Image (cartoon, rainbow, N blue to C red):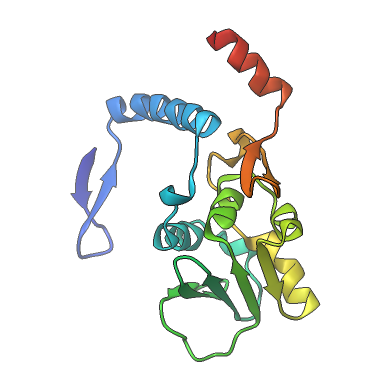
Length: 184
């Protein structure tokens, strides 16, 4: 990585060197591999990490035109966060920003991590009963439009919730079964 003076004034800007550019393809391949073989457990999940990932991966073009506040309430660990969605200036708040809540998402941390990772669709997460969403119909329906996913979500192994075992289990896919057979 190279550091150069920031043309806008203070600080620096960073650029990949030619060797860094070549290495980026290797890192991407490792990310794809890691996503396909991820074995996530509840103890791996951290609400601060999830909320920061959601915030930093918001796509401005998918955010609502007018400000919308989404409160996230996690059961365990008991934490609350607010995403203030504004097309030009979204924000993540650890205290109530005082605008009122348009949508409230109450849920299980592991379930929402799996949605972010691409293992589970938001609709399926809600169907399990582990995630509840409250608010006006249009605001609730817009959730699936702006809710960001990991850059590796397309490579995730899908899961489903096993009510009897009260855990997530992988859904066998032809692609993953082929990869397993090649690994043996």
